[in-house]
Amino acid sequence: MQTRFASTLAALAAVASLTSLAPITAGAAEYTQVTAAQSSIAFSYQQMGVKMDGQFKRFAAQLAFDPAKPASAKASFDVELASIDTGSADADAEVAGKPWFNTKAFPTARFVSSSVKPLGKDRYEVAGTLTIKGQSREIVVPASFSANGNAGAFDGSFTIRRGDFAIGEGSWSKFDIVANDVQIKFHIAASASAPNGNRK
Amino acid sequence: MSAPYTRTAKSLHWLMAVLLIGLLALGFYMHDLPLSPEKLKLYAWHKWAGVSAFLLVLVRLAWRIGHPPPALPASMSRPMQLAAHAGHGLLYVLMIAIPLTGWLMSSAKGFQTVWFGVLPIPDLLGKDKETGELLALVHKSLNLLFVAVILGHVGAALKHHFIDKDGLLDRMR
Image 1 (cartoon, rainbow over the protein chains, first blue to last red):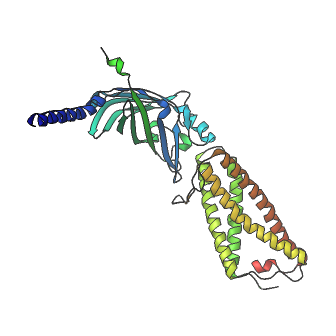
Image 2: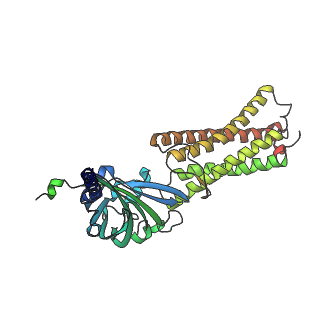
Image 3: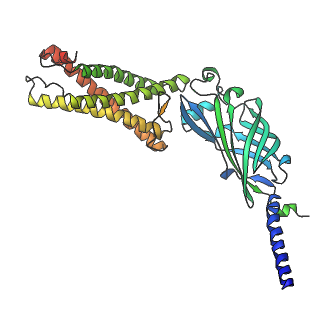
């Protein structure tokens, strides 16, 4: 009786230690591949009091994110500005022009992270430099991370001011028609690198 | 001269005459403008004025139910009286249908209507390019018809005044 109890206890302890280890093992995965097809970078703004939204269809990303070591995470994004979809062909053509993005001279918007601060509960604060149209600004982006095995996703939103980047010059530079604030909302799907890559 | 329209009916008639002619002129003018802050502003104003015109026509119809308009002159033949009633009926149908198609078109094109930038009018339709283009064509066609019916309306009023001299126009003064 005594021995059976002891072995049951031992088995329970083993199970408990396995379950407690499991998240750590999962967390050891490093997410390095961005799945562009399942990601989105959308924006919204106010135009004459009306909320408008759109998205960028193409971007490239470099990512290294290990949930166990968030402070050493790195990310950079290059968003192809000509891939904008504002919802109207007129506006798509307009914003490619010189007063807006001037995509011929500045084809991409670039974000490079400088630090990642864990806020707890899968929430992070990503600081970095955003460069659009030759103008660089330090920004802080809140992001939450969720993982499902090898697939992970970052979600978050932040606000930039188009005036900071000279987006909309000349007759567009006043903010009474098209507002200064632009909300960026992102969903970045990523997968962990193949486990055999870590084998010795 | 038969009994005049009520003062309220007269005020609504002339207020809407000015508003609708302005809306028509603005609509045809802004349509071909290159994209600019001015164009976005004019579109917003057109939509605000269009919603206002729609509300005014509802007020007008409600008033009309409580205060039937004076009878047409007995000197008018039966077919002409029918034509006059049909013309007025068509004006009311268009005053209802045109703002409705404008609102639906805006939704289908992905530009919600927010009255005076404050009161959002719900989108009945989701964003869809083909629906948007179809509704734009309907909105435009109805407006061309509206212009034709307004010209007929003005022409008929002037004929009553200057040719028939039956005092019909004075009822709306």
